Length: 335
Image (cartoon, rainbow, N blue to C red):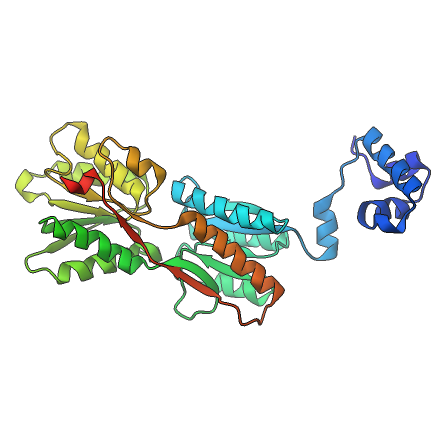
């Protein structure tokens, strides 16, 4: 049976209003009454309905975070950073996984709007920010995570992915490779498109270098393995001599495909580099070179921007933060 405020009031021989004051404004109640009500709460096992209370007050202590793939260690670390900053402010983070699908993103946005969260952090599935604009117009602050919008309508925390793609492929070319394949997709995801743009810029600077684009349907290990198997099935002369994967999960999958039959050696036959520098990248059978993003700091900073928006909606504080990526070289390209 659910214990109500009325049950507590009856047990403590006080009014419902007195119980409410004890819960929300104890300084207005005598110490003896507070003790009596507290004892009744403990004896009955009463649990206050914070959600209902916050809805009545028109506010909550929660921040929403919607990521592209909650199973990706990069986004898990982003979420940890967000949680750490939110905890410092006495708030919690509600996590939604869009799974790279706009319909799921829409459903989470509507759910969090109904729950009246203090704000939304989101890595959009695509470049259509209309849904976020409507949410923001309704009074819900929005901060983009690992993403920027061209109109600069929202606060954002991102990494220069064009530079990251350039760093990755420039490194491959510096090792003498010339036939580079890019594995990524879908290209409607801004980060993927930016990393490909950077790769193209690097290839354009080196005579004789080529770039083959292999578009996959998702940024997962399974999709990376499928792409790797397609490349492995080619005659050796028709394979690329280097692969840039749009994230580390794709790179791990490709590495699995290359090493499964031991007929493609990394990096002897194909040099391989990923993106994100997740913890697992250094622990693969051939440790992966990668482009490092400060995942924890991205999540932490995104919440910090959101809190500043809540305190000063029209304030002069910085609303857009962009970090620079870092090249991390390991055995998968160093041979």
